[in-house]
Length: 459
Ligand SMILES: Cc1cc2nc3c(=O)[nH]c(=O)nc-3n(C[C@H](O)[C@H](O)[C@H](O)COP(=O)(O)OP(=O)(O)OC[C@H]3O[C@@H](n4cnc5c(N)ncnc54)[C@H](O)[C@@H]3O)c2cc1C
Image (cartoon, rainbow, N blue to C red; front, top):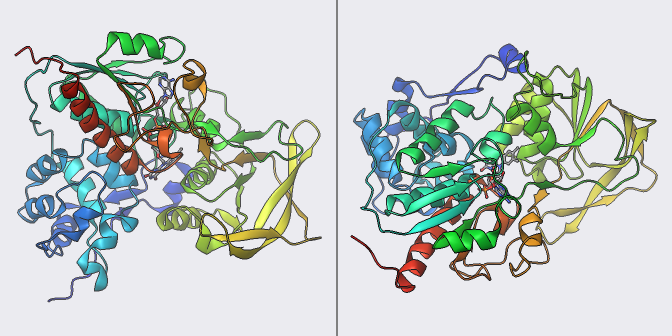
């Protein structure tokens, strides 16, 4: 078999990256896309497909790209994935489809994610097949990847779908969390418009559990899907955390992404720290740190209690952060936030790694007497998020787990008949593609449940 090196995507110059919100990865140009597609061995049993939670026909779409047919490739992808421009940019492919690619045992796996992005960006707007109306109506609560995927699959099956979203724009984390320099919002908007073309209706600025109750939705619709995510941030719970200048990564990113605080003429207030500390080392922390660089910080330090090997963020995000000047202070944990009214420094303690804990990662243990201070004028806390309890508070019969996630059975049915749930609201903070996989599974369960209810097909 001929040796064929993996193609690398184009990237924005470093100087522009530090000062603008333009997208960093430029994807493939047509020549690179063709070369990369040619690396696909078209394996008969396609192990890559097993690594895709939404079951994209990966060899099928790459075959089209080999023929130079980006529109054909996009049609193949869209049979199972309505957000390819999103997934091609933010999915952790290295742990999913690409981890199972046979070429991975040779010169590196086929760049499936970047090829998916290429098809999405160059494939136009192929028409999607939908079934005739089935006379059923379903309410989808939340317009993140779980809700959007569930809505798309139900609409393709002929169901009338209304999506209820509490923010003024649909997209969930795709619009309020992930920054423009990783996921341009006009692309998210375009993929959401694809759902409108399928007949999905959006009701924005509508809070399920407040503006409209779950009981009302159950009365007005044949079934309900809850894809409400995990948007409630966790904090450190240490002295001084209430000082001005301390915020969650979610708040910081929402102001900047959804409320466009990075634009010169924006009215959204946002703090522009000069010496910024970000606590945590997941994708969200990397997004916050890289955003702070672009917002004019002179020094951005990521503080993380474990070591480099244990960092949950994607390797590419860590590399980009380091290239952009973010400093990593590893094996360190904040114990106190210092300052009068406003944060002035964070006192940390050194950590060492002990035996693995329940997460399988080595447990960080404080080293007595090793405290030290890092000066800062802004502290961004990025320790993870949990589901917002609001929905449950308005509906006591909705069962939740001790962690606050919605309780579901194998079909993603909740404790309330006809109400299904999936995505971060069920798993806790996870990934876009897992949320999409759950939205897909829930759509199938809902259709089966409606059939079992004996809802008649008027046609
Ligand atoms: C900053 C950031 C970066 C990330 N980066 C990546 C990445 O690179 N790759 C990756 O795979 N994953 C990433 N993730 C995780 C990923 O975005 C989530 O796992 C995914 O968005 C979960 O999808 P969801 O549909 O379950 O929830 P969400 O995307 O959170 O969407 C839930 C939606 O429900 C709405 N909602 C909530 N309650 C109500 C209510 N009561 N009524 C009406 N609407 C309601 C919310 O406003 C929101 O729009 C990131 C997350 C964050 C925060």
